[in-house]
Length: 71
Image: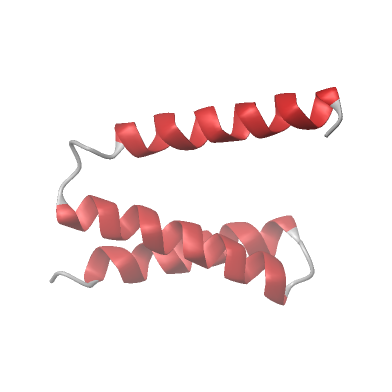
C-alpha cells in the first residue's frame, strides 16, 4: 500500500470514529434524521449521477422521512 493511501485510510477511519462519538448524546429521533439524511444523500447522488442538486435533495427528503419515523 502506498504512503498516501495509508494516510487517506487513517484519516477516513479517524473521521468515522469522531462522527460516531458525536452521535452518542442524540435522541432516537435525531439519529433517525441523521441516518435518513445520509441514506437520502447517497440515493440522490446515485439516481442523478452525482448531481449536487440531487444529492442535497435526497438528503433533505431522507432527513424528513427519518425525522417523521418516530411520530
